[in-house]
Length: 248
Image (cartoon, rainbow, N blue to C red; front, side):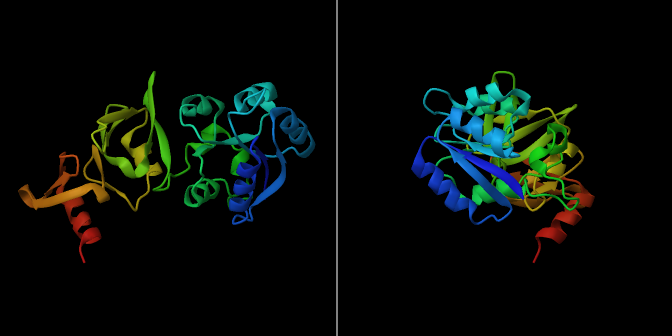
């Protein structure tokens, strides 16, 4: 069980989240708080391993609460109606950032990554280094970019990826261009859902949902055209695997 507190100044928001969490028996709701002062008291009393925390609250924000708790702060999932706080939220090693109204499917995906593993370890108490091995689900949003150019993108919106040295460039749908992540292509592939992504060749990865056209190419290879117009050459070996995976 993951002992949890709900912290939100809006009574209806607390009630809605409590109702959603009833579908997840692995979550134990130890209490609710309407402000930072009440939250500190309940955290000291119950010692939860996880909190669902609103950001904009009267007198003290959710950020103020976490700063006051310091190293004693539990793991946190932010719940807010605003997305402009997302970048600062992840300075606190947030487990996730859920926008209101919270989607039941999105919440389920988040909780799935928190469920104790087969060794009985509560992932809500893991270190950031441990979390780096956690796979993404198709509906997840991930933080990408560098320096002042950070943004959230959905996993499904990643059209493909290309290895550039020790970094990887993501191709994004909808005319959003590209984004850079400080991971190798292999490390990124390990975290992306295998149901969506396919290794085209040594340097490129494609999202199968964004494949617009396929045509035979040289020496048994295939040329794939993605939805953003990008053309990717599938090596002969990968072309065979692609055919086996996609053919009826």
